[in-house]
Length: 234
Ligand code: NDP
Image 1 (cartoon, rainbow, N blue to C red):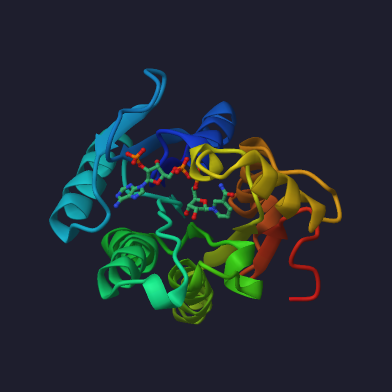
Image 2: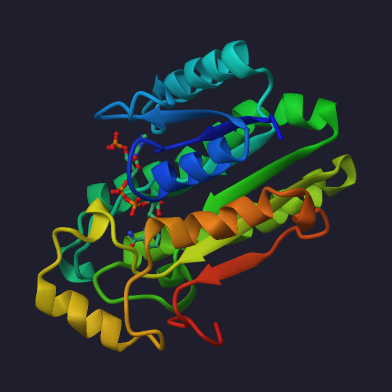
């Protein structure tokens, strides 16, 4: 495979593992980053997904380097955890803006050429929290649940053009995102997981790689949990 792939937030964590997995299959991978560039073996494009202008520029650059995007992985995301009574409107809006509207901005930029090509893969990185909720994460859960409705609507809109749109819902994964959590809290969270541990970023990337692969050609609108069983039944 030598497809043009774009991964948002691919400089670290889950996005980096996804980028590496697809690059190792032979795909031409560009990743976006906001704070620090990716390792030198990957093409990095500066882009804050909360800016439509930056998204437009990054997608144009990816297209110039590798051709129209054939596989999009919308991975960039943030948390601003607080109980509702302490959550400001800004906390809520900023999380929705990065996690949900950010995905909207990127898909909107790549979609015209994907639709014209009548082939393509879109994968959104949601979260098990979007399926089962979590105290202190109502903004994050809303953004991640929103991605599911968004993806399923696009699956209907794009299906006749041979484009699949799917969601991966990771559980607790060992990245910078959870680095700020106290060890005790992580242990408590792992105790709620049937597999009794966190995921590695590579385990999440494996599901994305499958959804982007030819073997997944008849899967669209699906939500694949990669959560050690944490959201079982949801
Ligand atoms: P990290 O915090 O390690 O990485 C987050 C990535 O998102 C970084 O690349 C970051 O870029 C990028 N990003 C954040 N905000 C923006 C923005 N406004 N514009 C562009 N890029 C942005 O987190 P993970 O790798 O763990 O998370 C990746 C995805 O997986 C997220 O959507 C997250 O919600 C989801 N997820 C994570 C879980 C976990 O337990 N870790 C569980 C379930 C889902 P930069 O480095 O430049 O800031």
